[in-house]
Length: 141
Ligand SMILES: *[C@@H]1O[C@H](CO)[C@@H](O)[C@H](O)[C@H]1NC(C)=O
Ligand SMILES: *[C@@H]1O[C@H](CO)[C@@H](O)[C@H](O)[C@H]1NC(C)=O
Ligand SMILES: *[C@@H]1O[C@H](CO)[C@@H](O)[C@H](O)[C@H]1NC(C)=O
Ligand SMILES: *[C@@H]1O[C@H](CO)[C@@H](O)[C@H](O)[C@H]1NC(C)=O
Image 1 (spheres, rainbow, N blue to C red):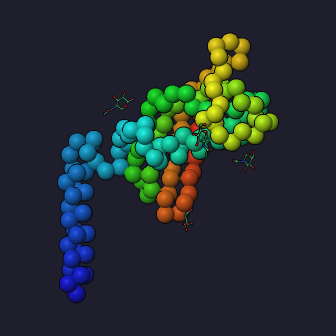
Image 2: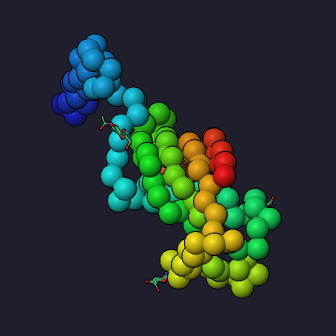
């Protein structure tokens, strides 16, 4: 009984906190996208996932990997949604060598094979389902 009451009280407290937070300026509202650190664990997972997806879909002879992250945001919506603007550049590793460690692949030097794409990705992680859903992934040269 005491436990039940305690739970109810804490639920009410959370609800109250939400309505206070939601009632004012947008930047404190739960659910709006907020900038996150480049070291965020989930962000690194998202960047890896989009890189695999890029390499899987490209017909290029070489593997690409991320070279710059311009924007990294996180939004709480039934899981965590990441919004990332990044650059993906061609490395010297050939796909046919099946190198599975991109950190060993250097970028192509300036020249004919040097190429970078500007990409925008929105990826939704649902940790309790172990799900990663790429909602948007667009790249342009
Ligand atoms: C690569 O893409 C193919 C279809 O284009 C898909 O069947 C396969 O599961 C993908 N592999 C990975 C590792 O994403
Ligand atoms: C969030 O990051 C973007 C891009 O890095 C930057 O332009 C913007 O000012 C940042 N916003 C806040 C509130 O820090
Ligand atoms: C990939 O290579 C780097 C640098 O050689 C190494 O530090 C890292 O442990 C390797 N990662 C995997 C998963 O093998
Ligand atoms: C998610 O993955 C972890 C570790 O890979 C596993 O222990 C867990 O059972 C998985 N959960 C679901 C819901 O698949």
